[in-house]
Amino acid sequence: MKKLIAILLVVLIFSSGTLAVSANGSENLTEKCTSAFAQYKNYTPSATTYIQCTVLGEIGEYAVFRARIIDTECAYPCICSEQIIGNYKFMHGYIIGPKDNPTGLYVLTPEGEVISALEAFNQNLVTDEALAEVAGGTYYSLFDPENIYKYEEIIVPKLKEEISDPFADIKGYKELYEHYNNKGEPEYVLIYLPAPLFYSMPVADLVGDCVFYGDMGGIPFTYDYGVYVPKTGEIYDLIHAFELEIEGIEKALGYVYYNALMGDCDSDKKLTIKDATYLQKCLAGIEEFRKDDEIIVFLYEENPPARFISDYNRDGERNIKDATAIQKKLAKIA
Image (cartoon, rainbow, N blue to C red; front, side, top):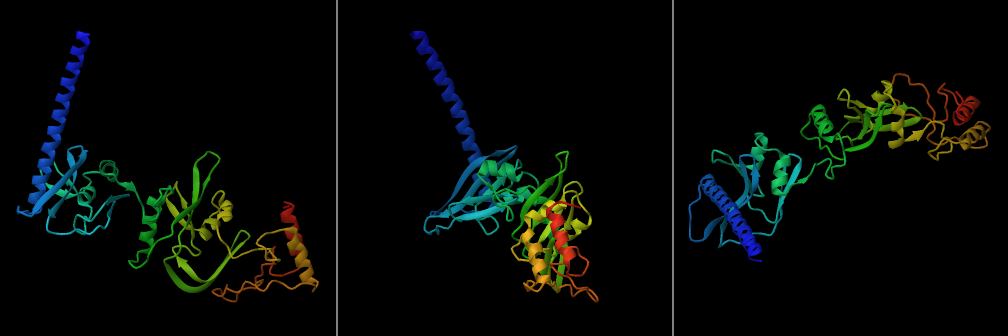
């Protein structure tokens, strides 16, 4: 029993000694950060002010801390502050720093210099991920706030550079579909980005059986859809991607909004045997062609040929051959 008590006493003494050293180390670091922050702010002590400094942790040789000068005679508004550093959002219960550092997050360098955490990140002294781990930051992206997209950090900067207009407000970015080849490698990614810039021109395109049209074309993508190819890093308009015949590109049409479907004579957004029957009735004068059957927005072409949604075989005419072509398509006959 005496032996057991002796062992317990040794363990307690050793533990308390370890904690004391750790606590002193923390106190020393807090003192260093406080002193450096006072010099950084040219702080002059007074009867009503003091520096509140909290050391959050260390990243290598850099200490990360949050600090502010408190004036006991001032009231502070209860407004939550936030700041984006890299891909992470840092928040605090109230605003404690200047406009460029509202959360009061700082870094103490090995030389004893105080710089803002944002500046430390911009100088590549610390990573945003390491800062987030120490200071409780959460992943955040203006275009991907829930961290659900895979290529946003590559694609968005490329598109911003392509648009190169400071007034263009890029938002609404989405990755809709990723296509893999038979080796399990990503072949392309279908992306959606509402056009921040437009040019006034009537446009229309046929992509597979899908009809896209509108009164204005968009930049960077004519109809808000583009394709990113991970292998090459290239980004294409959806229309261009079909022209390039990228492997599996037809699959992308299952994830886009289109204005009409070629051969969809009864306007139900599906190609069925009913369309062949409806077309036959239209040709016989029993039914009327849909009001928007003629695609009239190809006006940017010189002497544009007539184009019709019911012209399924694309020969420029509406006739029984189109009904037959629809039937063959449904029966998967070439």
